[in-house]
Image (cartoon, rainbow, N blue to C red; front, side, top):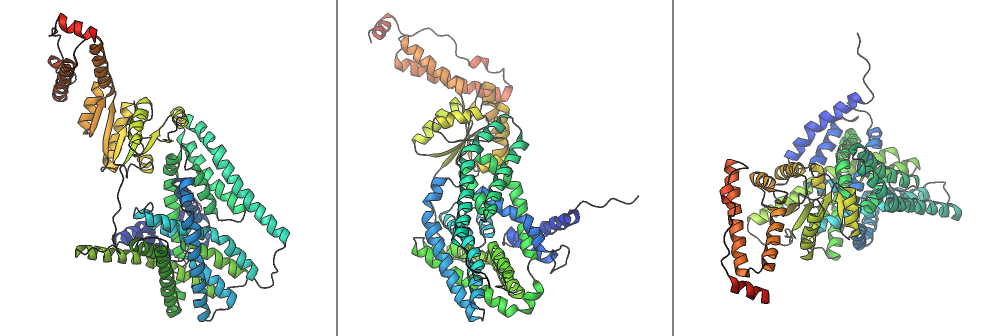
Length: 596
């Protein structure tokens, strides 16, 4: 019996997965990062390589969803206040970079003989860096939250915004096209403003109540579906208005950054983002016309060197002029010198409007892809230079700087116990992140002014999204012993650098925590009972020094009993219990205490 026909894209999926499984580990082994592996895999299996897959443009339509989800996740990490604090980097540094680099590259392409309108599109298209590529590099290096990473992100965000006026420029430069009427311009502006308002209103007032309702159902798959709906729905609204889908998803992420479900959303979307981002870079690699590069290699080589050099110089100079130390300016310069995915959009639009011919557009796309390939090499070169300088013992702040790291705490469980712990930590000005899996607690804590997020502590991806990898200390304040045990095992395995402090619910739990090797554990009932007993003795007239002796003796006996129980079992060590002893002070002491 003949086998049935395979499902659509089945063979293509196998080719894609096989190519990435081979190429990505090799690239990472060479220190070039996973992105280079994806690009190389796409170039090899694409229509200009082994021809195992068809056109990269067909794959790119689906793969661009990876960029959308990436920007949504990035938005989740940026609250509106933090984004507003970056306004100088976004609108100042970012605008200056696009304008100065675009004008310079326009002049350069004019010298190469391109027509005025063609050179204008080419220059500003090449001035845009790759948001997906640069953010992937920053995330892999764990430097997205660093000062230079935040400034680089500000530049990338402005570039994403600038695609709108650049596409309008293409329409204006198109031969035979007259300028739009004022009514058409007003209509376009109203659509854009309406789309932005719709995303803001939905993100601010509708999404959180819906997620509270879904969280109460405890259906993880529904939460995942809702997370994807928020990201893709906001992207679709912006796309309808003619804006970048990635920008729409980013805006939705920023609006959800203050939501209680921020870390769970990030953890749920991360697997889809990673897979689609890999597919995106493979599709970009498939677009590289290797035969065209071989035929026009001198022109392509000049273009790659010119783009990376001009962009790198402007990035370094502008970063230095706006306050970055030399080390950060250098890192920005080697992270953002490549062309970007929006250049493909711009060049395609220019071909459709008869501004660029097909061959010129392919040459420019080849230059963009090759600058992507060489960017990790530039980053690796700077790292190697910094390592050599450090090995020689040379103090060179122009290459290497060290940042002060403030301790952070992850509080898991925000009931009465966790809330008191949070009060003490925040009173010292320490930064805390708190997660709980009960929507009612989260809602109550938020009303009290605490930022608590919805999250399951038994999921490693949720712990990672909540910052367990960066936390100096994890405070386990949950009541459920089994949940705490699973969370401790995950933290020990995936985040070994964090100290673990635990709330023990009873003696048996305390013994279990001791066996697990936590850094600190306290029985809430024992400590409250000791405090209760002290207060009772004070009222009954016992002198303070005698109370101190009693407490010291009780604690010593309790520790000895715990040690015996660890060796012999729960019911051992009864002889260490405190026995009844006669009072060692008489009537005079009682009369003095009564008088006091």
